[in-house]
Image (cartoon, rainbow, N blue to C red; front, top):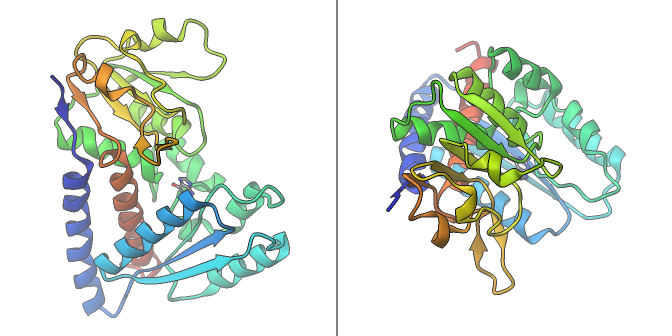
Length: 283
Ligand code: GUN
């Protein structure tokens, strides 16, 4: 029987801390503000953006939402970001990904000034993470680290295996675990004998984007299993990358979906927005 790592409880603790600091900051005349841009009608993205808005409200942040139509041009999107880059009330800018196919995500990411890049996607922030001198931590990997810390799970010397090499999760996750002295392996679609590699993991992070991908035979007895996946099944239910029913009896700790890593991502975003507001005001 694994212990459940409850993202709702841990994220609430992080957010309570952010809300408290925000209250203090507001007394100094500074209100953190988050601008969220969403282009098109992707239903999952709409839910994520609504959750981010709700969290801003809970924190006492100002929130600015820009819901742009699917046929928005590259020029229009860049012009909006350039406007937000200059806007004093906006401490952080987040453009919800994925963008419609005709838009260039890389260009969008590069246009957000690094000081307002609360996703930590800009090459300058990515580079800082690499050398361990970051202002912002990428939201999902940082959320995972917060969960491990909360549960007092030691990373030093542990075999950490990540499935997935995305810029958003897999790659930055590997860096954060490495900074905490884990022995890190990153697996991907071309990895040979995947189950053999994942069975070595003391800490297994699944960030594949495929429902129930991680099965019991891929997990070592007593492993810590972190499920970053959020997949929607045909019946409308949310499901992670880990086959929870199979894996849970083997794991020592496991994160559920929903209610695991997801809420942690938003809590880190709130933390980053607060950090941005403080830095921009010399606090
Ligand atoms: N789409 C899925 N996850 C994320 C995220 O963390 N940030 C942004 N901007 N888009 C996403």
